[in-house]
Length: 119
Image 1 (cartoon, helix red, strand yellow):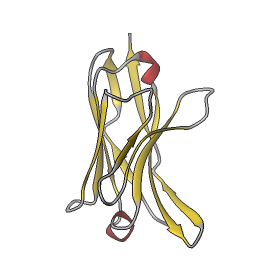
Image 2 (cartoon, one colour; image 1 turned 90 degrees about the vertical axis):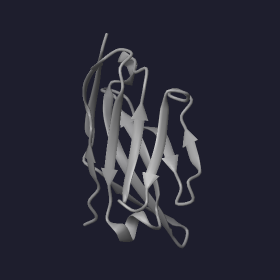
Image 3 (cartoon, one colour; image 1 turned 135 degrees about the horizontal axis):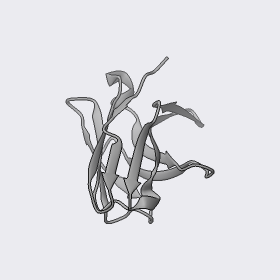
């Protein structure tokens, strides 16, 4: 059972910042595209950002310009810096790692960390 360990969620006022962290086992981190997804109450889980092993990034339009995803290969850890947070950013944020096994995408998920932005 691959374990992704998230930390850094919490309660913040609108306009504030948070940094989320996700630690992964080295054998997964070295070959996986890492990313963050979020799920608000009553909504589907949605992509926030991804980062490849080579450092290429992709951001959801809803948060682009306010977030930065990064990875520390020496520490097997991925980060999500979130600035100018809005109440609509309130959600459970999930760490994801995926790799390809032939043509099948193999996903690994963290347990989720709650981010609450108060107005």
